[in-house]
Image 1: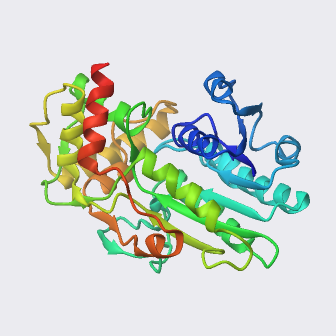
Image 2: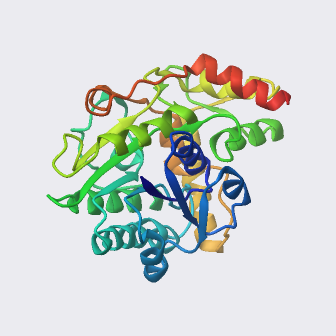
Length: 328
């Protein structure tokens, strides 16, 4: 089939494009950058802004399905800077698909849409959205997710995936952030090493999207549903952080900051940054402290049952691949 991948030049988008190409699909990518690496893979790339409705309409023409990964992620920034790509962009995708008669849409969301600042241990998709959010990213992703699920109908099938902490070789987000801060000495353990988190290796995350696309059609079991996606291997937060640092040849963390101290520091930093109008991201935010000091791991049995999802690359194998990538 002919599949449009929004955000195809990103870490997840590129992995999805590669798997679609490998199985013989005709793949079109839509994102802001030129993405020469996609063209080398055989992907037809269209450059444009997801918040531009006309550009999105042009991109979806003649496609059979859409995998929508494009979004602005992050823990700091104005609400508008997240709202335009995440909410307006998703609405543009939904509307354009409906106008073009496309019947299948797989959207990438995030487990942060249900994070209320407390431990989430083995929760499934029945967990409700929280009443408030501490960052614009989860707030806007939740709004986008709700819009996508509400658009599911007898003629238009929508599935939402919530992959948690995607990582692997070439990761410009989680791995890069951990390694850079570890090297600079700015990374410290927050709270005791007893909380557990889920994560997902990049190839597993990409395959979940391809599986969802295969299973999805109007009236199918996965239509109108959201699914948590992870490796299904909850580990202690700071064990994983140190394992990533070790893969890059960076010494493990030794200093620990109590959670109340970190939260107070984050509150002060956020206040100062807003008052002074500083554009850069603070060293700490309340959202980040909450994420790093609580458990968040998920029951992925629904994805296994409905999508046939089975993580093929374990955390141990993924870490070995990550270490090899740093060595080469």
